[in-house]
Image 1 (tube, rainbow, N blue to C red):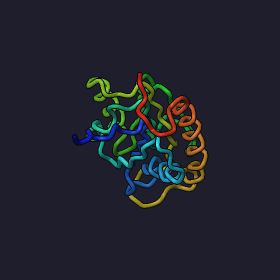
Image 2: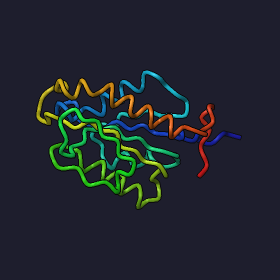
Image 3: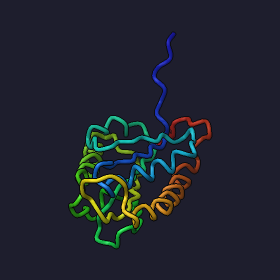
Image 4: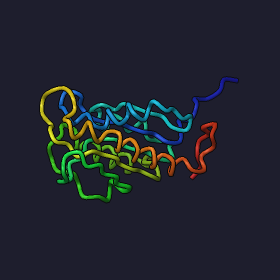
Length: 169
C-alpha cells in the first residue's frame, strides 16, 4: 500500500518581496537569515511576488510567519511584529505587492486554510524603487528582524513535536 503525501511542516515561514525593488526585498533577506538554522517543524518558503497563488501552501499548518517590507509610517529600518495582521491597520502603499499579503491571508481565511496563528514580521522600507540591494537602514535592520522572527518561531513551535509531526488544533 502506497503512503499518502507527507503532511506539511506545522509552521510555515513565508518570505515575500521583489528583489528588483530595493527594500521591497526585506522579507527575503530575513528569510535567508532564518533558513540558515533549519528546523524539521518549520518550512521556509520564498514566495517572491506570487500573492494569492501561495494560498495552497498555507493549509494544514499550525502557524504562519510572514516576512515582508511593511510600510506603517515609522522610521525606515523599524522592525514591526504584528500578531494579528488581518486585524491590523492596512499598510500604506509603496510596494509592488503589499496588498497581495493581505489578499492572500483574506483568501486563505475564506477558504478555511488560514493557520490559527499568523504573525507578520516586517521592516519599514526606505526605498521601494527599481534597483538592486537593500538601503543601508533596512539592511542594518535584517538581523533584528531575524531575531524577532526567531522569537516568534520559538513561541509558535512550543509544544510541537521535534520530529515535525503535524500539530492538531
